[in-house]
Image (cartoon, rainbow, N blue to C red; front, top):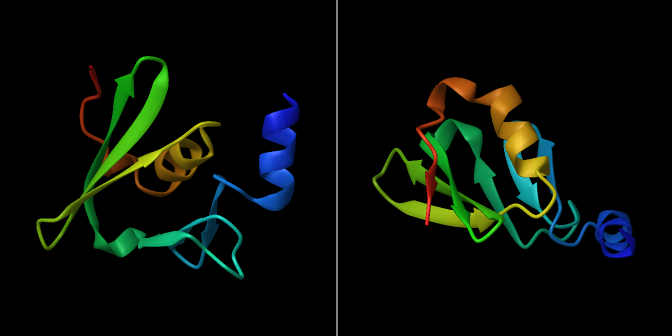
Length: 90
């Protein structure tokens, strides 16, 4: 619990939504971003109790992000539920 609190306070490995863009890390110094308009589909892959979200973009490329606290899933299920594909477990 302490690790989660620290992560949320410094926004380390935490996802936020800013103007239809998902931001990984602090908004003033993000590690990475994804524009929701560029996401064709997304799905959750469970790997030994870790949620990995795989994005498929309109240009055919993919990207994977881990979601330790389900904040990314909360954003996606609120903003783009129609683009969620069937999950898989590995």
